[in-house]
Amino acid sequence: QVQLVESGGGSVQAGGSLRLSCAASGRTFSSYAMGWFRQAPGKEREFLAATNWLGGSTIYADSVKGRFTISRDNAKNTVYLQMDSLKPEDTAVYYCAASRLKWSTVVEPTRYDYWGQGTQVTVSS
Image (cartoon, rainbow, N blue to C red; front, side, top):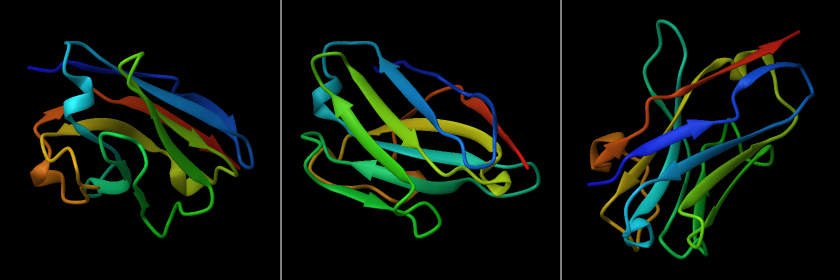
């Protein structure tokens, strides 16, 4: 069992930056691939970025490539999402998730086993 808690959300002006953190409980954080998703009102959950258990393999959605960076610190049981050059359309609730497919960069939300509660990000123009 893994519990995930996101933090770092908030309000920022367009062009600004935020860094989201996702802290995992349990001893087996390094056994999981990790991902970030978001969901805006009235829209489906959208994949953003994923990393395998080592952090050496990453993948990004086209909508955030070059602006967002996923990283992880297995010693701190934490995965991060650095978000730069934020746009109003980035406004959403952001979720982290853990997948047992530890060697993969997992895109499909159905392949994730655990989810955090989400953190709100609001970008104003």
